[in-house]
Length: 446
Image (cartoon, rainbow, N blue to C red):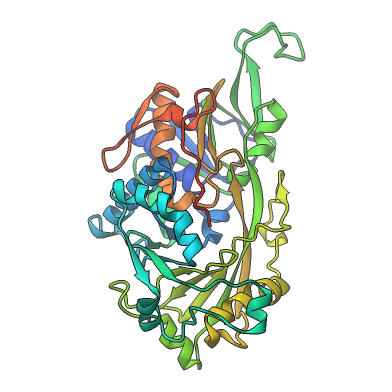
């Protein structure tokens, strides 16, 4: 491991990877694994891998997507995470508790096409009827009938769509797994090192100040760190998540990504028997815990965390929530809003689950989703010495392994290369690029 930068002259690297979130750390690992002779350096402004939005995520995974491409990317990644935990014996917190979408009749009818596509591609789903849900989930109210419910236009739950190969994991442990594997292969790491600017050079220099000029061929030859240190590399992988634009925009490359704030609120079950019973709703999974539940209004999400005795509550949060093109570096500046829970989330939550009446968050935090606003699908593309990955639209952790393999395929063979996902599925990298992009839009977002 290299030390922190401080203006010293560093040797030239074959590959510089900027960003140690799940995309960056998995990309660095697969590049080093498949090109062991190459010198690969990973840099991140924080003190360890997965400490920014990866670590602040809801830490869930699913293969239940409307897009066949997303189904493939997620399914193979989940298989790898299960391999890491069950066969390699590395605890990354994988727990297949399942996802449960509670739906009105109209919502289920609208979802039928998506569900049929999932089933035809081997995605394991089950549909529960209202009676089954009421028997299996203590205190659940399928048809809220209060005046407040009427004002909010809360629909009557007719069924629940359950995704079996879905669940939760520990993103910091997952990032740590890739970090340790990368280091074991001889990969170089520099944490507490902020990449500030990409370095662009002419392929054939003239020695005239101001290069490269418009008539010269140019390429990215490295990056300048915040302390002034310049790191040279034959290829630079930009995997800085919601901060990709900071590096790409100044050199005239569109990162196709915008950020949006998301918040999580935790409710403790301590001293609340009705919430304790809800948390331990049986029958859905082998863990004896309530699945990840998505309510039919505004995408309010309820995640049961058995070991800490609490629920994590979130929401889609799309209405009147602005996009951010250049996010702050300090994620704490995007503080959670107690009023958002009180006025937006809680009124819906307590109507379907009355046992949350009077419950207030014991903890709360916020992070940022990085959206590809074109089709809600991730992107990987190459451009003049760069490979760029991002735009996961809130599902980076669940597709992180597949995206790392695709970045490596692009590095070794260009955008027309075929990546081989963990489960053996071939995936043409160009599908996620922009020159010949060919992915199915994702419409099953959370």
